[in-house]
Amino acid sequence: MSMKKIVLWILNATVCVSLVSCSQSASYEAQADKAYNQSKKVQGYEKKMLEKRAYIFYQRVLKAEPDHQKLSISFRQRFLETTLNRAYMVLNEGSYDMDAIHLFIGDIDSILTKDSPADLKQRYADFLSTMADSCLARTQVTEALTWITKASSVIDNPSSLQEKKKNIINDYCKQYFDMASASFEESKANKDPEMAVKAEYYVLLAMVYDANFPGAAALLSELRKANVSTLSGYAKMVDGKLDKRVNKFDILLAISKNSKTAMTVTMFNNSYNPQRLKPENFYLVDEKGQKAVATASSKIDPEILDTQHETKTIKLVFPGVAGAIKKLVYENGEHYTEKFLF
Image (cartoon, rainbow, N blue to C red; front, side):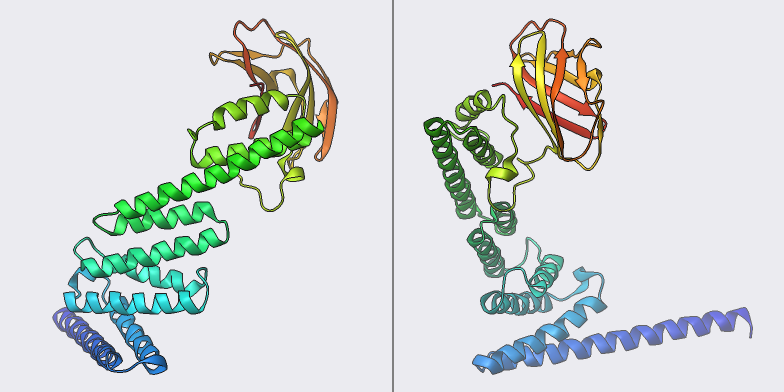
């Protein structure tokens, strides 16, 4: 067979495949349109089944055409409407974390544009807002805020959603701040240092969502002063899963004796690695950000602190520090922790 005939054969085969693919895609869309139109005339279970059938065939058309810009406006609108109907049904009858819902969201995101019909964009934003409410019901604040942010990006005027997000943040900050305040008062009343650790966790959690929440910075400063000589082991005092943005240190420090030139330090190693302790791994940071590394005359025992072990015999010596000491830092490779003094 000549090269010319081979090229013609390949071209013919390609055209045939393309025609078959186009024909099949058209067949899928026709079946989807039929089910879509029929679903408008019925109710209940039959309506759900027809919407499901329409969604399945619309999705096949979507997958057959990688360039979604080539899809007709009619197809896009009907696919968005059908997918939203399916998503709402699963959310109402199932759970917000079901895999199907996230598949629906992926489908919608792949075809929704700023030029999509306003009513469909609003319905999608409402759906995402409902997802946020489901997260809030399970105290999943960060996830809820993520859904609200996504919903705000869908519609042209997101002011109501932005207000909702602001209210969520304020409500939870107030809740955590009040819990911190109550725990601190209990700590002082009962002379219980561990309740002050609990308070520290909750005020830090409030500040994750709003670093400028009224009163939070002042309360945190008071708690840090109160907790200087206490290991901030939040897991011991706080029930449930801890937020990693607050409970971020796997090595804990406490300072039992302190001056501008010397400290006696307690360390607990909650990491997965034994720590070889050296003076150069410890340094002070003053209120102006200046560092002072512990001198070689420091005395550290033991030399190696194993995992899940504590030592109270770290005696650090520092060169003179001009400003007020803000924090003590331990840094050893990937391991970093700090203990604030105010």
